[in-house]
Length: 195
Image (tube, rainbow, N blue to C red; front, side):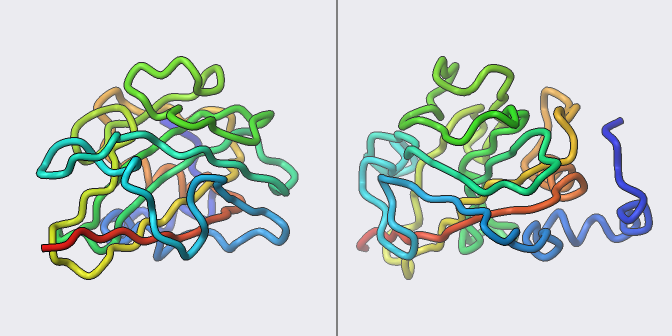
């Protein structure tokens, strides 16, 4: 099993709560560690090209380009998540999860989240999202909902590899990310659909 730091062993008994609310136990923003996108402004509105194609949505289902810098010393790999805490599920919605991004990486290019992507950094692995695909799953809030928040987060990890089962869920992956994170950087953007 993946290395779990000593400070986390005592928290395994309350792990269920952290799986349901993955940001409740997130490591602190590391000073100088930033995440940005040339395609999506922090606090802004996400363009339709990043909307899902299905579930009543008709976007291009393309993942945005992402860039990060200022990672904490000691980072041996990165993980990236895109999460909608406003999805009407009781547990949010995982739109994109990428793990085992090498420590040398500082970006993911536009549409790196395509299924069977050839533009992810070597070794990076896409975890199944809540649409059931190992790829970017675009934004697609229910029509008429207040615009949902989409939280883009890159985590610096103290391990170079998360050893996850092939059918790992977003919750299990989120738990293992948090267990090995030494810093994070994030931004939030919004998207809504008219009724």
